[in-house]
Length: 463
Image 1 (tube, rainbow, N blue to C red):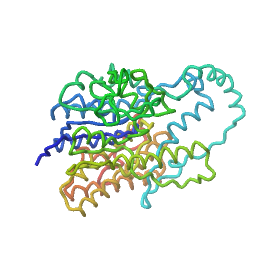
Image 2: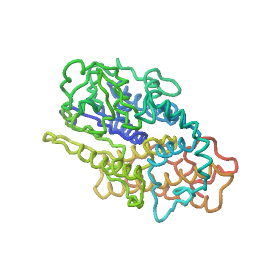
Image 3: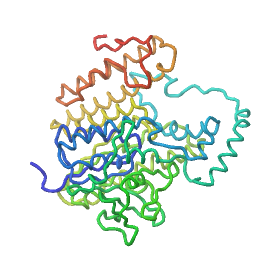
Image 4: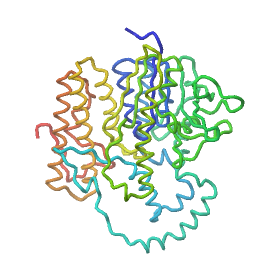
């Protein structure tokens, strides 16, 4: 029986992890025919939401889901998303520039998930430390430090800028379809993009017509601060992670990422009348255990763990527990395995994460017993763990001149885990993406073509 109230998609923030959300939405729309009346979103979810909010019918929504899939894969090129602030660009190819790149991408990347049966080679999870001669590198970098200091006077408060993404959302090109604000503003769907006003210290939302409303998701903020504002600027403001990206000015006020206060805007969806809510997360609710010795860790490492993982997880759980009206149905579709980092745009991992979102939605929505649902979820997680391990193994092989017998044996082990888990899901009656056979019979997606010395039939399902 169809619900009498409104249906909402709630799309959380998480950077490149948002590929999981695209997969989950694709399942809900294409397999179950879910069409939202309300979409609320934050950060990466805001980018996804703007694409989907151009649709009003199921047919239009199916097309927008496919468009979102293609957009996100095109965004696997970092230059289409991020630009460096002038002071950071001045440090390119120096010791200090490499350190910044490491902290933005490498240090925020989740550890490769492991199992006792299929271990990831040490060189994949913990690259061998290379001895470097620091003093000569520091000396060579000194002129760059002077240039960086002079350029820092303009915009010193962030490392990167989202101007390239704004340009692509506005004009399209290079595989990305532009967002049309006029289509989003049409009657028939309520959109709310979470943003935080720094000066006012307040949570607000950008609505489908560009109006800025207060934390009740309904009332325009007083005076000129209500806008309307350019929708694309609203999307970028919602995604402007503090310190990484600069604040965005909307109607004369500086705004940052809505995830600072409301990463999963369930309350906003409920305020707009939604009684069937699909809250789709990009980041696991439980931060993965970390065995690092934080008593001896650097200050940035402690900050990332405390605020970037633990505090963020607490905030997501709080966002999922607002006071909802009796009879409201809240379905939370969340990842358990952490596949990709927030600023890591590896195409193969993003594709894998989309598949994960699709399967996770299917597992949670399947009309099966609790025991079967639990087994299906375990099989899905096993698939994702093994495919992620395989991707990292293959990535290491892709960059070397050859593979050892241990490399190939490890890959075969990963692929057998995938094959067996896909088979189990099918035996339980759970749907699987149409290309799942290729998950164990071929390679994951990497930059460049397969090395000629690596056999194409290594992962034949009968091997």
